Length: 112
Image 1: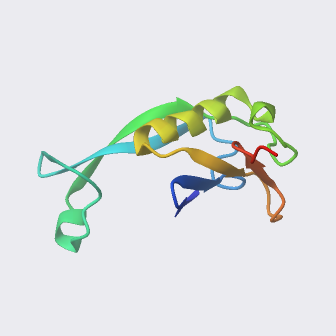
Image 2: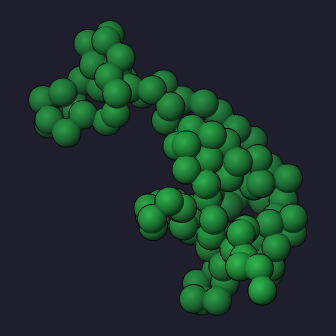
């Protein structure tokens, strides 16, 4: 999965990274020598001693490449996107579901 910060929204490309797993683990906390740290350490020394605490969510096996709306995605996929939003604190506006530049769901399309 790739996450790109764009202004105040996130673009989440999911096509090949999370499809087909029974479970998906999300790293939610990091500890170095038993002490919780705010983020993944950048020091190689600390990095080698990091313990990651994971939150496990159910995966999905359905093909998402034809989805055109958020509601078209499998229930577990939608729950995963919403949980990432909660953890990161930034809305996931775009969800990439395929290789094409047009294979993208815009969750907040402009109102005309």
